[in-house]
Length: 491
Image (cartoon, rainbow, N blue to C red; front, top):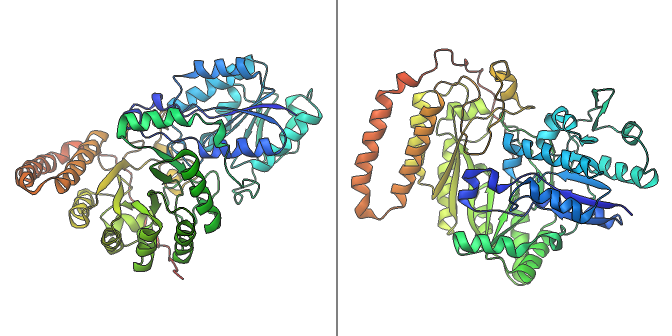
């Protein structure tokens, strides 16, 4: 039996935007792995960075647990870890150094580590898992238990999907994206999480308590900007009965007021959602939940099934109000899908949020104004706005990588800096973001206040449009040829 300290490096306090937002969730993938290692017979402890004050807390946990092995396994369900934020990489490297100083072996896994294993090996990691890495992790642990004195080279010898340093050079045989590993089943190690600390912050900031879970892993769609270093285009869905059982378990055990379902694409097929709803109602009933879903999945039956299951809010990757931009992204959805989905969900009392992406290759002022018009027409209850963010492994990244300088990642999620030469500079997109948020706020305001605020907003748009030439990049990246949209078959 090994003493294994499992952790991650997403510190909410290191991300000012998210700390201000104040909606933390326990690291699902991390505690799934912790549960698996415990099932394998090891003594497992958890360092949860989410609400920690800093790396000093991790160092203290090392002294308390004295592990043989430290596994820094990032939460693959947290979209912020997929962004590979620079501040979190710095924290991970500091944690690696601390674990090495404490005499532990160190294994690292996550999106950033999969893309850039060299950075983590240079910080002192003995091995970096590329992709989900469950099979490789299990083998490394088995080898360490049988041969605790094996040097790093022998420890990982012959294992595909594991990066190590050999004579100062990174050694790695990439396996490509593999399907989600079937060994990650059952409940995560919820007992290792300080649930009451999460509950306290949620109640302090919002007056209610939310927990996260996931019904699937992966996404089968092929948007050109979407990085998928963990599961590629594989998609694995749990049974509706199993997901309903976990929601019931969380409801009985921790009494959350709300559940965040962290799937990239929730439900996918309406028959699955209907079965999920039936299992929930046969037990102790649903907990109101929020999902992410595609607009073209929202048939009338799907909207009704989601409402029956207890869905309170659905976030849709709208991205743009310009069909030309959506086609360039290979998004596979139509503008009409967005408006229809918003209407159908609203008819069942489900709030709708739109994720909006500004600055994609080839986007021009007319496209930005089309996004403004979409928000006015569809009237989502909320929006989240970002700019196109090139990450390794995407077609988008390949199109712009020659322009990427020293800064290849945002430092935190509020950075919103353009990483390539788009049509406009970062300040312009930040201003568009602010005006789009104000538009949604006006739509949500009481009727008596709308006219005056609309007039002020229109004046701000007019002023920004008049000055747009001053924000244009003279060396903007030319747009790619329009991609052929993917076809979605609904059954």
